Amino acid sequence: MSNLTAAYTSPDSSPHTISHPLPASTPDPSTDARIAHLAALQSSMKTLQADLNAFLTQKMDDDKAAGVAKAGKVDDAKEEENYGEEIVDAD
Image 1 (cartoon, one colour):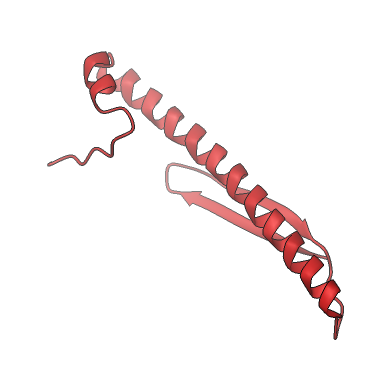
Image 2 (cartoon, rainbow, N blue to C red):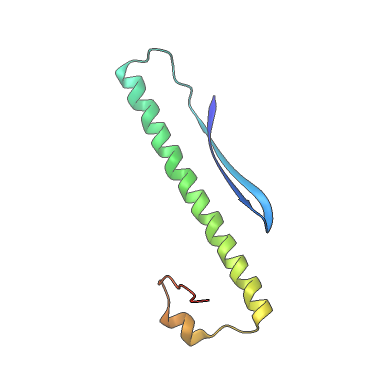
């Protein structure tokens, strides 16, 4: 059985790996077997993506909290104004 795996590495934290098993494919599969295998692959990819998004969101929240702890307090008005927007610093 093979696995679908995503690995996150960062110089600031330990590596994180997410893995989901994939069903084994048969040599010379029928059309129905190929369709089932591709459906399982698609399902595993969606699950992996959801898990990875949850991990990255938590990582961003942790990094943001660490930055706030260093800088002091959060500017709530600025946070509200920029909610959902990508902020590019001009530094």
